[in-house]
Amino acid sequence: MIDFMKANNELKELSKGYKEFENINHFFLNEAMACFFKALNQYESDSTRLSSIDRLRVIRDFQNDLINNLKENR
Image 1 (cartoon, rainbow, N blue to C red):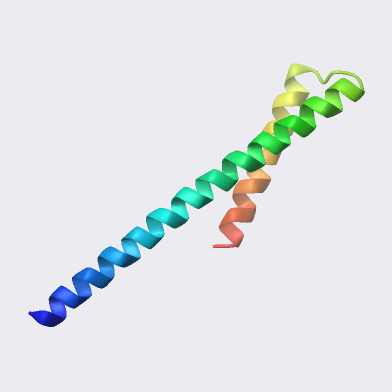
Image 2: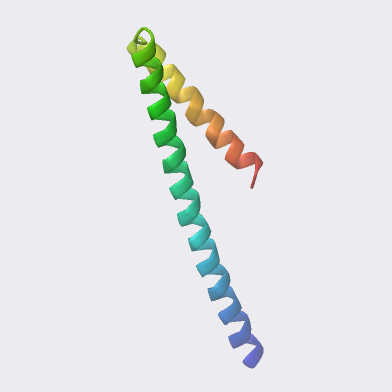
């Protein structure tokens, strides 16, 4: 019974660590998106504005690249 309790406590600690990792991961994803939009807005203010379709394509491509990068690094 003691081994079960010990394993249960270790599992709880691992769960807490994973939740903290998820929170950090979400924070960095949000920061990456914020930086991307700042850069995109700066690009558009420095040159011609992108069409709505081009803007959506750029955003979609960035999100896909970010997701693929995260999947590769897991």
